[in-house]
Amino acid sequence: MAPPRLIHSAPGLPDTCALQQPPAAAAASMSGPDVETPSAIQICRIMRPDDANVAGNVHGGTILKMIEEAGAIISTRHCNSQNGERCVAALARVERTDFLSPMCIGEVAHVSAEITYTSKHSVEVQVNVLSENILTGAKKLTNKATLWYVPLSLKNVDKVLEVPPVVYSRQEQEEEGRKRYEAQKLERMETKWRNGDIVQPVLNPEPNTVSYSQSSLIHLVGPSDCTLHGFVHGGVTMKLMDEVAGIVAARHCKTNIVTASVDAINFHDKIRKGFVITISGRMTFTSNKSMEIEVLVDADPVVDSSQKRYRAASAFFTYVSLSPEGRSLPVPQLVPETEDEKKRFEEGKGRYLQMKAKRQGHAEPQP
Image (cartoon, rainbow, N blue to C red):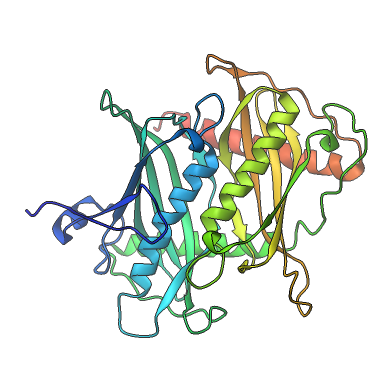
């Protein structure tokens, strides 16, 4: 069998390589459908000091950005695998992503992506992330993620094209994929306008309140943030969202914090080059050892008077507080003040209890 060959992953991805397997090796390694188009890929790079916080833990946003890069590469390849109008795959949604183990400076991140389902206008990509200690060779799973992409025409990025189908080895794989597709489509529609409000600053807030830790970041979208076709990479947006959520968490507990999980990230609309985006974060719920932060992304086409400010993306991030030795610490309890804050707290509590019950159910021995 011929050895794998290294190819350039994509323009603008420094210190990154993509591993393209020979067809036979790719078919053997894929647990999903038998895809006759582009094979599974892997990108990898060493984690540097600017990828991590002051304690040496890699930012969740750095990992999310790599996950999106891998997904964008393989889905764009697939969508251009047949003759027809050329297109680029744009991120529409990221399902809930858990950070199973922290990654540290000096470790190598291995991000593997494969296509597991296609609908008429979307592609499901499943991604696994491993961290490797290059001194000992030890590897551990840090993340598993599912992303959804839609192909946009290069001639008109507002036009969604059809996706080439994949061939499934078993009928059950297609049926399971269709169920996941319908579920995410419904939830994406439900959340599009759920968070229409804007995070407003409050003068002299009290500690442990929502106003005390809420934060915003204003960013002018430049060429380096965008695809060659003028709209923002989904990974860039996710990285900025994680940065804001991390600031909120650190302000609230004043300790080292790390990303524990990200609820589904919904991308409601594209963000174009030259737009100004406001990424706002606010604490919604605290348990004994975790914090939920809502992050909202609003885009403002400042040089185009025909367009109004709009909600571009939204998500909930969960953070935990760590001691200098890396042990989980208790979190100061949030003090909701307004009726809206109390309502969001109860909604966050519901999400927390639901996820806790799901994890306990998975941990129970199967009969």
